[in-house]
Image 1 (cartoon, helix red, strand yellow):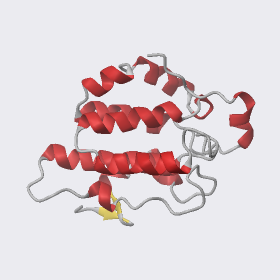
Image 2 (cartoon, one colour):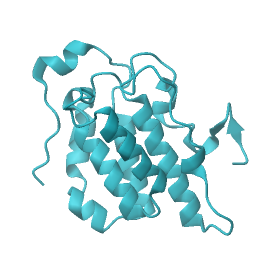
Image 3 (cartoon, rainbow, N blue to C red):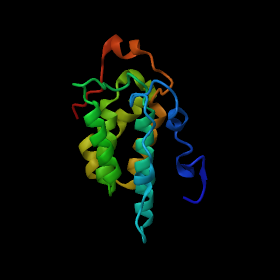
Length: 175
């Protein structure tokens, strides 16, 4: 990308998640965040939609990499165990259109504990189209909006173990 600051694409500088990528107690563990090179790559002659999708892939991976410890169940039998998270990341990197990327967004959205979402974000997310409808009717702008709401709603600075243990609630969609 033309304008990058510290190797981070300018288009992603406004993500709240960016601030927490290199902080301790992230759900991904102590390893470094995933490289965004694969997510950002587009072939020669890429359309503007292809370029936008690549930015959204990188944004989604950034949000996931910044998730606070306890916000998702990373236990070996949990929905965001090492194998599931790795597979999900590969799906994001390979997402080629709005529908496949929206599928990745709603998967992540669904595994994040309500305890790590601001009440306003919970309300906004519940007001957005149902998951199946969001995927079927997805567009670049609808993926960007849902991702923006999710990024703005996650309490990245909260890493207390007690927060997840107090109720153990995960968002359950009966949609």
